[in-house]
Length: 62
Image (cartoon, rainbow, N blue to C red; front, side):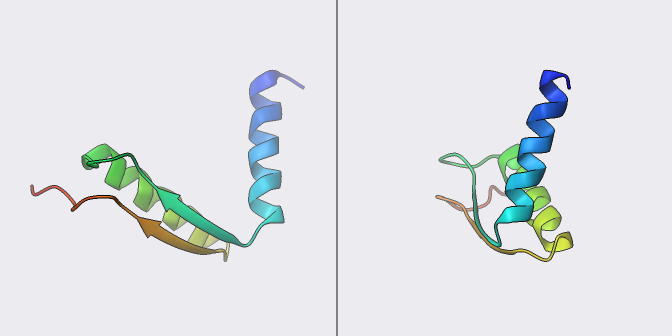
């Protein structure tokens, strides 16, 4: 199995073996950080996992 495929398989295994997750972004989140946090939350929701999303600061204004 190629390296990337193995890494994706490890991520999949980790997600399937655990039920509770904390999703965070970097300090002073920008739009990319917020959207990445939301995307991971959506993925976990689709998998039926429990999760909390936390940002250090406020979501930036448009």
